[in-house]
Length: 512
Image 1 (tube, rainbow, N blue to C red):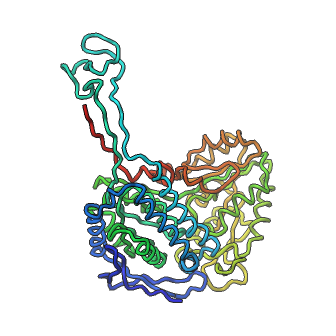
Image 2 (cartoon, rainbow, N blue to C red):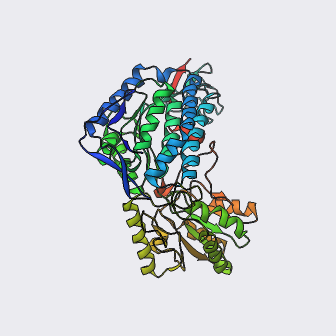
Image 3 (cartoon, helix red, strand yellow):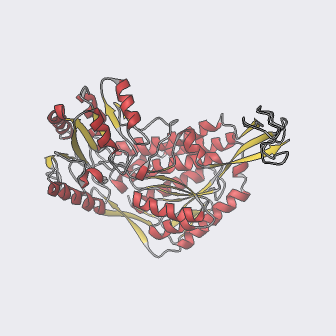
């Protein structure tokens, strides 16, 4: 089936883009073009932002009761699930993710995120009342107590900060405004839903700019938005490339940018947003460490880490623990266990339900990962599995699951994000050495610790410089827990109350 979309979604309606250019959709398993979408311009972005601004000010969306906004989100989640087969198959055709993963991570993962924020609104209180307090310390008359009516030294009398014991502040959480959402191609609907769900729950309006590689499924989401009955302009979706993305970040009527992508682009967005005093959340790259302590159960390790890192995403996951840290006493055993597990994975057509590893998302990604394979070999690392195109597969952007042994943490393949099915195994001497190596990275997004002693693993996890880390699991945290990175892995958090709070601005209303 071909998807040749001519329109973008602005102000609750589909309309022609002003762009003459097109974004081709190329199936990474077959290398065939099967659809296209408009490569929108800055003028299209401007129109979408103006629609979002008008909706924020005039549609009443920010002023709906939170439980009413929740109903829209629940309806959207239900519609996404109803469209699961078409959405999942289209995402697989766009980026090569195996079908089961497309359905699990994008369709059901997206619906779960919409439902999470809807459920959160059922008990969320937009306002709280705080009684006045005065700090402890010396006061003008020498009194050292804390009566609220006494002014601190040097204020010359009554202070507006201590207006009396009857003062009350209403602390009100208000939506930040218009949010620009820019997402990558690896988990497109999941990446949108975690941002859009929080933004809509908070009362914001949004303009979504999907990745050029996964523009088509975003149009299906627009159809679901219409079906769910959102007021016109509350959600707008504009397909496009660099011009559209830069225009969205720079637009003066955008109050916040929520971005997932590379660290290099994240820095550019941060510079632009900082100059414009916009809020940002940046979920960026990673080179996470998977620490295998001496007492680890290797069956749990091989099932929980290498498979998860290289499976349905073909290693194209920013949070994947792609640096495996193994104790010298068990180094060969760890390498052998990884090779045995990964060599058993079935590589092939991502639409085949038996496939466990599909292709990379694009020819550019294939060239990038192939380049790192050559870099690793040139650096002296030893290829113990894979290292190139899988045998017997002549078409598609496929790279076999690859394991490099004898890796030093200073090598480029240990320091730079490859974003493909490539794992490196680094030896360590003891627990302190493992923590040092784990922290010797510009990134800090994910991580894992494998051990039979959960308390020991938790203590190691506490010392790793990262935003998220698992003990005997490489999975994402639950929906009510924050996710995000430190260092070059980003700013801000997604999911949980912390992720919801990114889309809010507190206002103090003081009454005496």
